Length: 362
Image 1 (cartoon, helix red, strand yellow):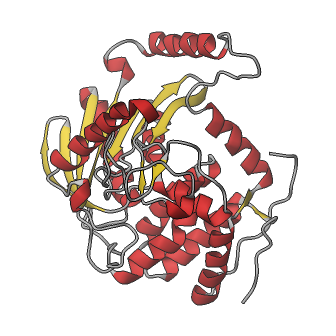
Image 2 (image 1 turned 45 degrees about the vertical axis):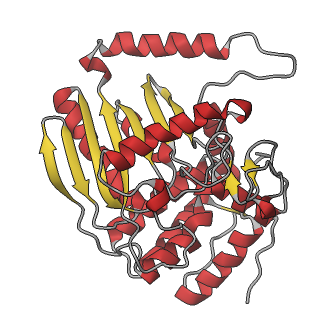
């Protein structure tokens, strides 16, 4: 078996080719391969590595096992005015959510706002990818999802909520969107898996052992802490918002009823829900005034006084900076992902990604 040098950096375009090629080789249809690749690459490009291409082996296992429908029929099953409900037919979460957001955008173009509930979807992926899709078309995008239980409540000692992400992206004139993409847990569980692969210690107050006691050992982590540390009741309540919109409002499974992401059952669909919204700014105020307001807000934010050796950044600024560097210099793979890519390359006869030409330090 081949070996990938951990110092190797791979060109983004090559990662797209490899990822899409492997997904297609599983028998997934073009729409599924396109959407899953696009979502994973959004995360990898912008430095959200926990939800990037390191998920490819997991998605392959879910597609091959039958948990994810390789050739779904995503269709509207209900609608009224600016509201729609989609049944994703157990599609890959990215295909379901990109489809839902595009419908929300079209509804918002007609009514000023559009809201789409998603039924029978699967793992959500990077929430920001779908909100940014709306912002890139001039709309405010909002995305919610729940996931299988892995996060304790504040002062809790059992898994209750999922990491339950919330994302909002806001368009700006001639610049990158304002972008919030957050788990309502202190960190996403995929971050724990990444740290396990890298052999790194977790920050304080983000993970717990089986008794709900804080631990920085990624290998000893049995549950995550809610966002907020000593004020974790706020993170737990935010997780509840995502739970209500994505599960209660869609009639899908609550976090503690969803089959675990890691199996062992990869044959049974997980019957998950999600929810997206799009808002047309000029349904409320003229577009020029809106953009002027955003420009003024961001100018004042980025120019505000910071602490010594600190830097004030708007939500999304770090991601856009990382993306610029990775477009130039490519991406290194963590050891577990590198090993998995070698195995996938040999199993599906898809050549490994090509190396990037290093232009400057990231």
